[in-house]
Image (cartoon, rainbow, N blue to C red):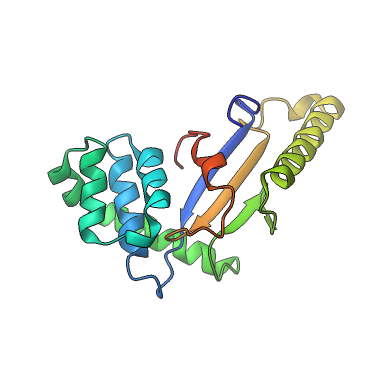
Length: 175
């Protein structure tokens, strides 16, 4: 997917840890701490692989497997800045009506799509709209850095999201 949509697709993860998932907030903190060492997507992928076994020990184990500086990682998990990002994401999610995870938006519109084929169709449709807008308006050129924005509100994500490996493998920058 990343090769097909190179420089046209941006994936944004917004943290929305649900209170009924005991380790959801810690998983969000851990992924952001991993981001501090340049390993957000790798850590996120490992969370997917181990979602049923997430606990404090597993989080530290994953950090070690990814060769993170574990001491720094554990300190970073509790940084006020990381707590602030998660709190902001939760507040923003509530404001726009997010109640569960995953909640996915494509170019600002909530979608219930889940299969890779459906996503590819939707992305292609959004790219076509973008290309038409470029053709119709010279002033539109250069106003956006990407044609399709996919925002995923996630907590500790489980196997309900069939696209997990498709998007995790896209390796787009965390925002």
